[in-house]
Amino acid sequence: MGGLIKSEVGLIDLIGSEISLGKPFSKEIFLVDTHVAGTNYVHNIEKISDDIVEGSKLTFFREPDNPYDELAIVVKDGKGNKIGYVPRDKNEIIARLMDAGKLIYGVVKSKEIIDGWTKLDMKIFLKD
Image (cartoon, rainbow, N blue to C red):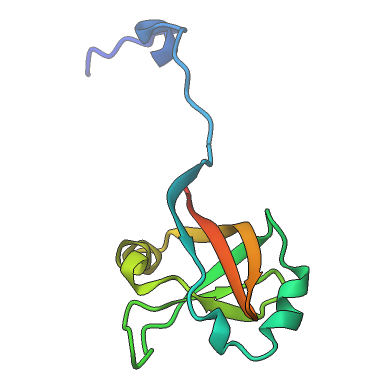
């Protein structure tokens, strides 16, 4: 029949045992610094923002049916309260990444109350 020869040598023996198969990894990639837009339109933002402090995680949700911006991204606090939007001038690439299934989130950088307006600055990250 065939001239197959059974060998006790494995693949690792042939290519060397110094191979690292790697490990699954996850890393956070900083994308941009910005603010949360539209906080002045959120009902009860003063009360909602009491729990928002520096370092609080913010979740993002796409809102493709938004009548003003098809790339709109809603920003919510840790309790699921809508607190505003990713600014329109920063949302195009982030929206496309989210539409492609990437996990994008924000972290509060600072909070300031200016004449009744709640200004929230955030850093936006991609978790890959």
